Structure formats: C-alpha cells, structure tokens
Length: 142
Image (cartoon, rainbow, N blue to C red; front, side, top):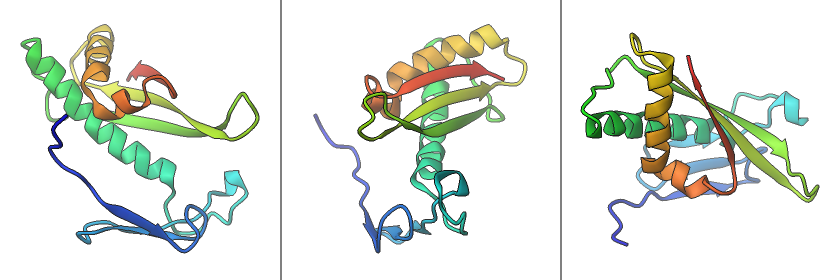
C-alpha cells in the first residue's frame, strides 16, 4: 500500500480531559475539555469526538462527491454532511466506543438518492473503511 499523505499530531498534558494536541506543521493546535455530559467542567476546549466529527464529515462529503462523479452525477457545492458522533458505553462493560450518524443534505436531490450516494461513499471514504467493523454508522438524508 502506497502512502499518499501522513498527518502527525501529538497530544500532551493529560489527553482528552485537560490536555492539548497539535500538528507538527502548526496548522492545528487545540486545548481539550471534558463535556459536562461526561462529568467534566464543559470548559472552552474541544474534545476528540468533535474533532472526529469534523474530519469524518469533511472526508465523507468528499467521498460522496466522488461517488456521484463516478455515477455521472454532480453533487453540488452547497451539499452538506453532518457527523453526529456519540461517546457510548461498550456492551462488554470494559470500555467505551463511538457511534456515528451521518446526515447528508443535497438541495434538490431526493432523499432516496442521497442515501444511495451515501452508501457508495461509505465504500470510498477512508474514515468509513477504518471503522467499518467496529463502529455503528447510520445514514440519514436531511
């Protein structure tokens, strides 16, 4: 497998609850806070679920545009993809997992067609590929 690009980020100072993370090129530098819903102070920082949601929604929308192109259809630039990423208890009671709902909106496109393109994008998107057998991913058309 040929690597096309590798991102590098380092987390420090306690990780998800009170830490920071930054990329080696300085383009991203974030402070973390734990949401109140998870017993934290709900401080000004972000959290891994928000970062995952931002990355997944962006990547998935790009994959959906590619899926449309491969099928002879243009997904317009005003299309949106929202990733709802939930932090959940695992069924085995040992740890935690994430669950995802991807919500696609393509103005003027019937919901059934949006869902078809989302299914095709799920086969293209590297985030989807990485989590395929470990994360429950649901699709919705807005």
